[in-house]
Length: 272
Image 1 (cartoon, rainbow, N blue to C red):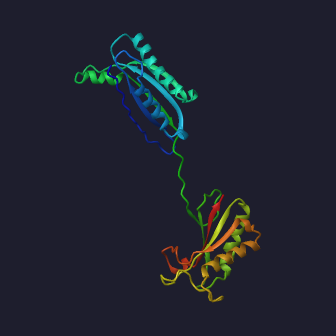
Image 2 (image 1 turned 120 degrees about the vertical axis):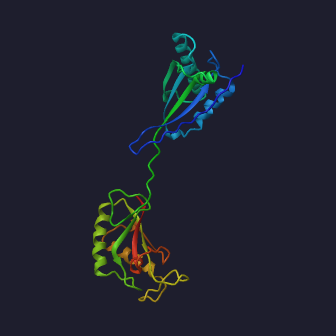
Image 3 (image 1 turned 30 degrees about the vertical axis):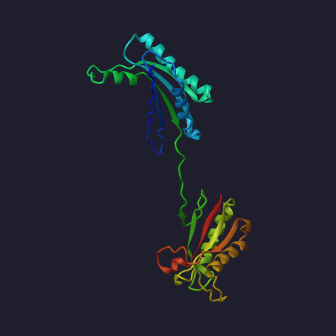
């Protein structure tokens, strides 16, 4: 007996407030039949198992018949078809508790003006729809750039210290920078869970020289010295050393603005 099946995926977009996503698999039956052959059964089980299990919220199973026959008989037949699919899924290890609906819908009526390809239309109505209701995809949050500590951060967020800009060739913290770091230290004491890396930067070196010379130490470690200077300042303000690391990045991360903005230090969140 000629049996066949077809998989149809219908993906519905959902808004940020959260319309649900559905994935639908349609299994087609022969006229007046509700039994599955091995190929059909394996295919519908494979369909479910290939769906992202972490996002499956529930499964609904709806059975249908074509427009021929009496209503009572068609409701029974469509219900048998739905239960055939349900039993196959459960026997294959799909948890029955996530199957929230098993319903025979009876016959699908055909519009009077549909005469062309009528046998094909009817064949597509002899089916069971397996509807997998999916949880929305988790929102992807990308690291961002901020000017001050936020109530909620993610790893990778950068805190740009707008007033912590150094003189050319210097790693000394000036008065304006100290005022900004005082405020930052108070925020860091408030949000004690945050761990971070202090990143030092430089400007105005030739491309072949990634690091600049600190005019006080005469050594080519200016960006590292700037980061260390901020680290030492935070230590004096009782910021736990275990929360902090520091590193110089030379001229590898220019902001693409005026050179003075590259003579900076940033905080990058490493743990929340």
